[in-house]
Image (tube, rainbow, N blue to C red):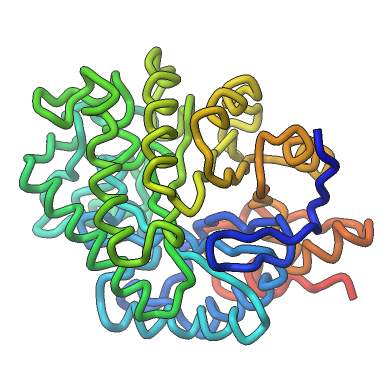
Length: 368
């Protein structure tokens, strides 16, 4: 064991992070017209620039990748311009920021899809008890059940990879320090990683860890060719249940294989979701983190309802190199200083997580 503090610096590829505290991706549903960020979004991120690393909210790589209303994209010129406001504001305050790139897959609704088509997935089975934020039959924004998906063709999966590349180039133009590929939370990549949700009968199917991870690794290789592997991270959710994923009996096999492959590719990091507001108990046991560390010689970010004691224990035991505090960052823009000085933490208002303007978004004050 090594006594590592949250406030120790860390070298993440070419970046010199001032501390080991990460603000992970937090969907806040406040994108402007055309799903482009605005000056208000820039202020929100700038307020939190004290984090060692900020990872932006999930940004869809195409219209097809959209799963929720009012979430930002990174596939149009207006979106690039909006995100440039964000990165400039964060960098002006000395911060570092990666952009999370995502495709929702079956966690979507036909009213969000091009031409009203069914969302693509690795299965034709809908995500039970899972909602999309879309339009109801009267055209009003509403949380409604995700639509029944269709199995993506191989060419459609190749197009998804091309969409990630296009998004990665736009992310670079927008000034991000790197990108994080979203392979968790029951979204498209996660649907392919899961041996029971994946019902394909081809080389992207569920039979082997190689076939289950093929889509993610193809996307990683293509995106890393744009940003560099040392600026390309991956978010995974082993044993996650969000999005009607359910227990996967082959999860350990899948993610240990994936860890070895990402280690060989020298990814910037692997971001492991241990739990969330939906599954607050850790779903990824420490023994698995230890096994993953044995094959993954890359930095690990651990996130999911951590407090300071739990976070520093993960650092000290060598199970993580950086730790994320999502829930706490909503209401504590100066979280690093609050934790450093033992100042009280504010509680966020759940009613404003995904709706509204400035209230519950940029109006949480700093302690001093």
